[in-house]
Length: 364
Image (cartoon, rainbow, N blue to C red; front, side, top):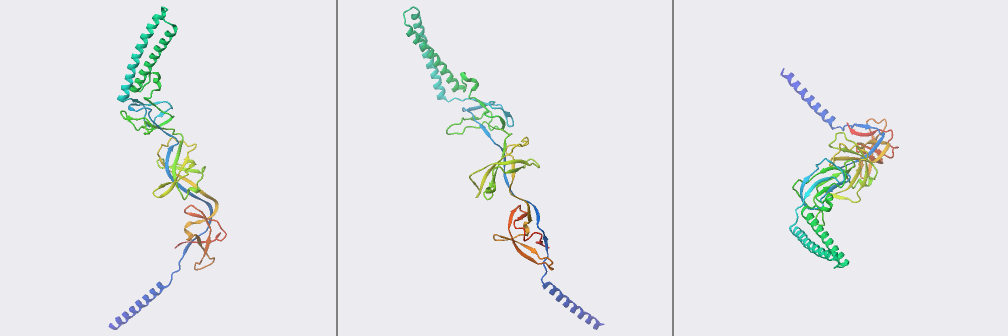
C-alpha cells in the first residue's frame, strides 16, 4: 500500500513538471496580433470651427444729459419701447452759486438800465410831442428804450436757465428733458431718481441715463484664433446656437473680420461679426452667450478614412494595407496624401493606392 502511494506521488510530480514546462513553452511563444480592418468610403467631409461670443444689437446708443443736475423723474424702464424724441427722464438743476449770483446781478443791472432808458424816452417823447425835440433824438431814445427791454428779457431768461435749466423762449426743448435719440428698446437704465448726473464734456464722458438699441437688427460678435482666420471670408454662412434657447439654430453671415489681432492670455485672436439676416429675434436678448459654427473647408464625395487608422511621422502620413489572402494577417505600409479632416474622418487626395483595399485599424 505504501509502495502504491509512493508511485502515485512520483507520477503527480512528473505530471506537474511536464505541465509547467508546457505552460511556460506556450507562453514564451509570440502571439499573433489580429487587427480589425476598415475600407475607405466615399462621403462629404467638412472642416469646421466654433466661435464663442455673444448676441448684441448692431447699434447700442447711450443716452446722456445735456446739463448736469439731479434726476427728478425717470419715465422708462428696461424693456420699454421708445421712439426718437421721447422723453425718458427729467433733470433738476442745482445751480452753481457763482453763476447764479452773476445772473441775478445781470438782471438787476438790466432793470436799472431799463428804468433809466424809460425815463429818458418818456421825457424826450413829451418834448417831441410839443415840437421842442428833434425826431432824430426821439427815435434814438426809443431805440435805446427797446434795447434795454430786450437786455432785461435776455438777462431774466439767462437767470431762468442757470436756476431751473429751462429757457422761457424754448421751454419745449429744455435741456432738463432727456430725450431718446433713436427708436428701439431700452436695454438698461443705470441711474435712479435722486442720482447726480453730469453732461458730456472734454474731460468726462458724461453720465449714461439709458441704453437704447434696435433689437430687430442683431449681430453675433465672437473671436477666432489666428491659426484659422486666414480660412475665414466675409460672406461665409454661419450657424448660431444660443445656449439659453434649446435646439436653437439661427442662420447668419460673416460680415466683418477685424484687421488687427488682440492678445488674450498669450493667444492672438481676431474679432468676427456675423449678421443675423432675416431671423425672428423675438426670443433673442442682448448679451446672450452663443456659439457660431463656420464651415472653413468642404470636400464633396471624397474618399475618406477614419483619422484613427493613419500613422503620422513628421510631416508624412501612412496607412497599413492588408495583403490579400495573407494568413496570418500581413500589412504593407503605404504613404498617403491627406486633405480635409473633421476630426473623425479625413480626406485622402490620392485615392489610387488604397481604393477598395482593407486598412489596418485597432488591435483586437
